[in-house]
Length: 304
Image (cartoon, rainbow, N blue to C red; front, side, top):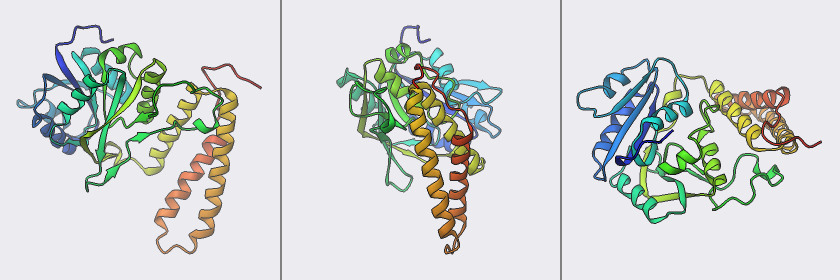
């Protein structure tokens, strides 16, 4: 992976699945940028809309990988990584719009901060409000027994909707872990970068608007939550000991039971029952998954 000599300053990688309406806006915002030499690689995960028509149009100027089935976010990014030729790799969601000067700002930031292996940008909601894109802790970390101690920097992970990495670092960590199909890939990658001895950075001068959840808009909310919980469980299995996982599982079950109890109490008093019913469905799923599924560490030796 990533053995070819870089030809460009930046490789922009976009993984797309049924987001044609958003993809047009994203590509236009990329073309409007003035920056160093760059390439755009789009991986389409078997979209059923007209995404490929847009991507393969005469004015698109893209390198396109058209998958016949949805291979997932991590694997699709790795496909693009394998053919990329940029010194830096910019992972960008298709439901985004770059504000002026983003590409120049992210390259300048990485050039000025050689200790940073990967960095996220400032992300805005469509209404201009701030969207959380930086986290200081990993899921379940407060229950850990030192598994994640000694890492550099104070940023745990940044949103995968908009993040830049050094080509050498992506080669060092061997890209994304393809066991993550959708959700959790960004925090797992950021942890891998920190374990390799690099720092995670944040670029507030680079403003990116992110709509969020567009590729999942036709998926039932409960199915989205199931994917998120499964990704969370995979993260625990990969990075924590059995003892830590047992503590996380216990705390999660207690949280789910408490939320189910309180939601049932307040449901009869709610004028609009749709929102609490969806929350109830979510916490029932959480309880079921963490109670019934055997969650064991697959990296660290188990401690009784």
